[in-house]
Length: 235
Image 1: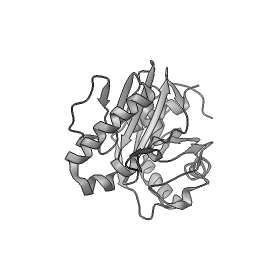
Image 2: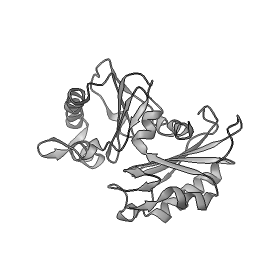
Image 3: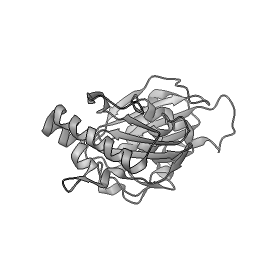
């Protein structure tokens, strides 16, 4: 573990179903570099994705530690699910493997959780959802994360899950108008379920949200998924 001082640089990495992104953050979580992105390789097997992260790390420059957002359940740095990547991720110790490759300490968290950390005010009940290849979710109460919330795989409507109804594959089939209608229903459903104070909507497809949003619902920029990486190193 590196000592806490103002010169510590964190490499923040966001692994997605279509792209892997990275940037450097200072000790306060402010960007030090421009966001870099490479396509997620197919098949998205662990060692191949680690190669991509290594390439992004080389572009970003010197760093002291690494934060990774991963699209699935993560416990102790081990990825337990990976619906939109590859079955080889199930039970894979990403934190240890990436730490050995980069020779730096690594912490891994669900990608929606990391995005939520980059958006929340840490007051009251706050929910983050991410609209991309899949449907991610993160719940916070007074800034404290409720771990391993996988709303995307819970039943939503017509016998299908939130991810089946709102994932990118479905969006490409049904089009923006119908997708936005479903999103409106999802927002109403989530509000009744969580009684949140604020809902944040992020992810690559958030730019296609065209409905009028309630006052306590906000679109957040994609960069939030990287800015939240600093939270993984807070005591």
